Image (cartoon, rainbow, N blue to C red):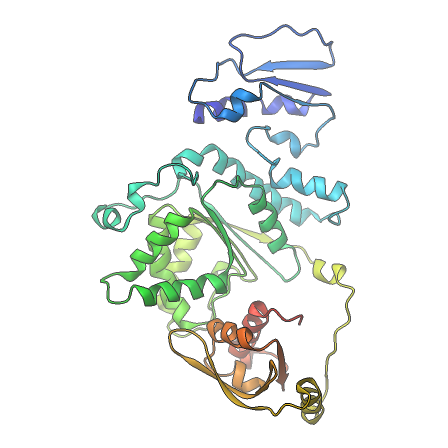
Length: 411
């Protein structure tokens, strides 16, 4: 299979100079061309062997009848079952599904296309096919016996940039073009960490529960796409270093989006020195790419008008609005279960609505798991006293960002 893909890669230059392309992949010698000078016929100069994929043997010819763009011309049809992220991006722009992006988005898509091509070429080596026999090396016992890591030959990709630059959209576009039978997973970072903590709780008592958790994750997905990578919780920071050391050793390929450069992750956090080896491993196993766009595409796409209370002495007005939301109900203090037996205190709650002073929700050591637990019970949140953020309250600002990230509410 790798020979097939390697041979097809040699055809790439032909895509850049033709009005009509006809590719034959199931012939032993060059067929004559009777179509005319405007059509170029190329042979891959090999015969597909019996164990080649069914798709190759059932589809002898692939044709295109219109010129391809320079970006699309870099690809071969076989390498991209859905044309790949770069070509799909062009298609959506042509169809009016997306506004035309800037050069920074195109540069990012070029990186995603490069990764896509490498994954297709190395799919067997990376054992991405979910239907193939799972490698013994990913098992816990085998990993304990190995004296050396089994790194993937393909490096991942870490995308970072400001809000609204299209990071999530671009990663989703990349993920959606990948074959459905691959061992892949796309998940929000905070959801991922909640799952990790839950799995650790299940395996507590083992000598190295993180190795077991990493084995379960890698058995399910070799390509792991994490959206909104943001570390604000000390528990997450302490787990990440050892967890990803195991994951990278088991061949995991990471694609992540973040608002922060790797060197700025968990900046100013408690015991950050224990987190620094993770940053080094992240930079070693991933290509780091900044999306430098200054355009906030979320604002361009949003025509909604929000309701914002700005100014001083508005607590009374907010409480009045909160009372209108709960109707005839009586708001009382409540306790909400979060994770691992912990609870979060809610100052006032009724009829699916919760009221918090800002300092109780963002100036205390509260993390994403607590916010998830809160939103499982309450559909509306009244947050009183959001301050002006600066260097003096960076930790509170980071928690507020986490609150917004995990919230299903339309902030």
